[in-house]
Amino acid sequence: MSTRDLRPKNRPTHGGVTLVELLIVVAILATLIALLLPAVQSAREAARVTDCKSKLKQIAVGLHQYHGARGHFPAGMIIRKEGLCNGFATQDGLNWAIAILPYIEELELWRSYDDAQYNEAVSNSTVRLGRVKIYRCAAPDLEPTERVPALGPAAVDMLNLPYAVGTYRGVSGRSPGIAFLDSPSAIYPKQYRGVLHAVDFLTYIPERFGTIRDGSSMTLMVGESVTSTNLGMQTMWPYSYAYYSLSAITEQPRTLLGDYDACVEQGGTGGAAPCQRGWGSAHHGLINFAIADGSVKSFSTVADLRTLARMATIDGGETHQ
Image (cartoon, rainbow, N blue to C red; front, side):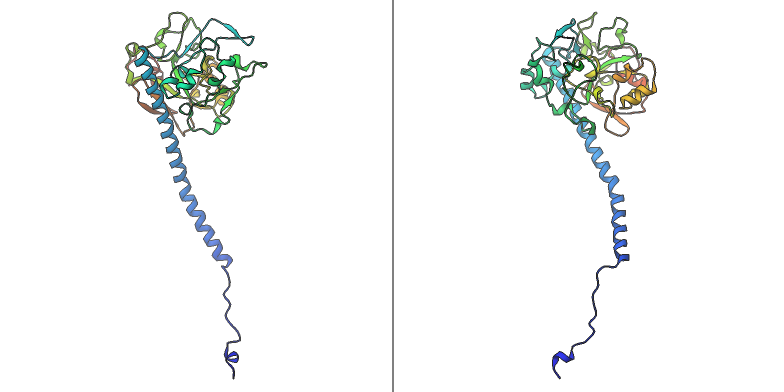
């Protein structure tokens, strides 16, 4: 008998993974992903918050360095007598975010700025479209990097000029909802002014540490301001028209939503005006602010707005708690 004849005639077969086994593996993997996903999202959110606070810190340092060099903080914006740029009415000129460019390692961008011209002028297109990383906190709604504003001189149909978007606005002060220190207003209470407000009208001049009588450690200076809707109302740091680079604290919870359309729909004193000057962030449940002493603090989006309103002023005589 040959060895070939001695081999078993019915060899056992080795099949693949059964359907039941496959389903078990899939279920285990799904469970692991479900457990890991919140941790990954939490880690990403923590990284975003850290990044945004770091940029606010750099902005605060830049403002302090400006003060050290000039003896005062920059104007929130300089309101000029109304002029014409490209045939359209404008008051758009220097603001705080442009003024501190040399102090946040953007000297070349600063050198390209022509203060003798309005921001809509061709000579200022480099600054108008400047991509300054420090002015952009991580936020999904900030693409593309520039947009045409919904309002103001740059929004005129025949001009239609885009501006670089950002996430930080200077704190011009507190407001009852009907008057703001980012445009001429004879009825604005002077004790409501903040660190960064409009100047060159009435008796308003740039502030300095000596005028922050409420205490620099308890005074807001710059905060996060984004909107998930109506993106033409986003912060645009080189745009000095009213509220695009400045905001105010108004004692209305809707102004902390980070959602312009929802804020307007809720309604309240001042209509859309407080929403135009609202705050918001890409973080869940909190907004970051740089304080006048150079520190950075996080505040809940359901924070006591009376406290924030007091912190928005530099000489309101309030007792901060």
